[in-house]
Image: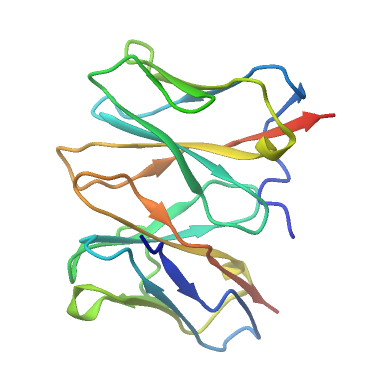
Length: 112
Length: 113
């Protein structure tokens, strides 16, 4: 079974620029998560989708972050404009009702 | 690659010894728990899970213990190997809720040769 795919693996941008990350979940997984992991910390949930609907986005900085999951499969997470403190690893995960959450390799974002 | 946990609690064990990593969870309503292993530059890898109707679950070289009374989880790794060196996280969720996974702060395991 193919795992969660994310791209790009690395991204370096200047502050105030925009960036987008892409995620393809495990086939058949209805739930998709975006987490932010700052160095030295555990992953923090940004947004959770059930199919193409948002279940939880309480920790998403909505003035600069947006995410969508069109057609209930792939998802994109966008940051516009980026700040220095957005430097982190952005992890995508997916799950089904009978499985735990499985993660992709993540995208390491550096904002300079 | 860059370390995922420069300031995390660290457990150092001798190769071949057993390791015990502990985790306190926060939500009394949580009824499903997962241990993840995260190596430098990689995403968290699912190791083993346990539901609240169990106290213990065993996998290959790993055992998870759950104490609901004190909201505590532990991960035991038998005969620790150099490849076990990583940061370990526990995650909790409530299956009667939205399946939002909350992560602990993590523990770095260092295996000494």
